Structures are given as C-alpha cells and as structure tokens.
Image: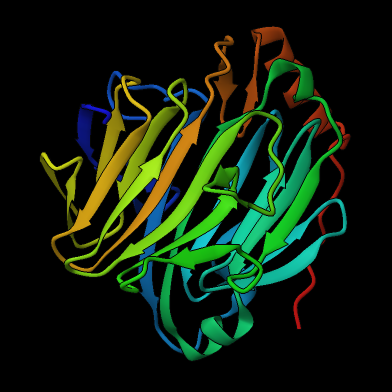
Length: 289
C-alpha cells in the first residue's frame, strides 16, 4: 500500500477573470512529472448568454497535452486543424498540441442560452521532448465511449480514460505511459486500485469525503500526492464523492514554459512565440450556429 507524500488544498486563482481552483502547480510543487497543471472550474450560467462571448476564446498551445474533463454541462471545441466538436457531461477532450495548434473552448450553445451548471477540469500533461514537435492530434471521448466498470455492490464506478486498469484499456493513446481514471464512489463504497510502482500518482477530489489508504481523510478540493512506495491504493467513500486519478511514468526531462507553451529550452520557447506570431500554428475562425 502506498503512503501519502503530501495533501494540498486547492487555492482559488484568477485566470483572466475566471475564478477557479488550482491544486497544481502549488507553491514549491511546480509539477508532478509528467503532470503540469490542474484547473477545476465550476459555475452556474444565467440564461440569455451569447456563446461567442463566453468561455475561453482562441489561444495557442505547443509542446504538451491539454485534457478537458467535462463533469457538468458541455464544451464546444474548435481548433485551427479543423476540428469542431461538442462534448457533454462525462466526456473528455484530449488534444495533443505538438508543434502548435490554436483552439477555443466555449460552453455549448444550449447552455449559454438557457443557463445551467457548468463544471470542468483541465489537465496539462507534458510531452516527451521527442514528441513536442509532432503533428497535433485531437480526440473527443463521450461518456458512453469511455470504458468503465462498476464494483459488485454498484457503489463504485470507474471510467478508464487512458492506460490499462485490470485488463480494461482506455481509448486514449498517450505518448508516455499514464493511467487516468474518472471515479465515482457512493458513501460506504470502497475500491482498490493497482498502480505501477514507478508511476507518480495523485488524486484530485472534486467533492465529498473519503478515506485514503485506510489512513488519511480527504475532502473536497484536496489533491493527494503519493510516495512511490507501493503498487496499490485504496479509496473509501465517507460521503458520495467524485475523484480524478492521475498516474504516470515520470519523463525526468527539463521543462521550460511560458504561458501556453511548454518546451525543453528557452530557445524553443522563443521559437514557439515567433512561430505563433507568424501564423505557423494555423488560424482559427470560430463558427457559431
């Protein structure tokens, strides 16, 4: 059984007027290799909104994988490679930015116009240096397309987004080994999750209350970071809870970042900025109904 290295309560941050919870990076914890950033955004939209004025407008990325997990509502994604899709509650958007891509993420039209609950988590995963200039890749994954299984008592449900859990393969193929799970546990439910011993592992808890590894109580907005001293963890639902589990083999590579670019050297960052300004990451002209 793994032991717990650190528990971090996600602080509130202001990202361009959007107030969200950010457990990673946090103070001296700049990354948990290969995971770079976690943003948890939750809000209620009032009716009468205009979709093109909401959410996050066109912006570039290079050198890493931005992943969006949709928990409530829906996200309309558009990018400079011609992808245009809508993903709703329970779905995931995986975008390998590679050599460069421009994208936008807006609430879906019906949510903007009619109002309602909206909740997402955005995760940044570093790409190995050898893959940072690969061609970009985008894959939307609905809840129904996500391989999942339930415990015998139906109190625990686990969706496998990427990696392999007990013989179940996630649909997403990553450039480095990862295990990404969407977990829902009802009060009284308990699950044991095997994890390769060399994987850096963390849990982010959206809500509720749990007992981690029979020892530490965790609550809403907590990120639990584990030591690499075992091959499994256990989670018990003290209250109904939703959890995102992230585990991955560390890349052990130098990371240099500036805004939306994550590369290996300052020279590569400067080149990314120049390429974006010269239009080499494409152009996104959004389309709305």
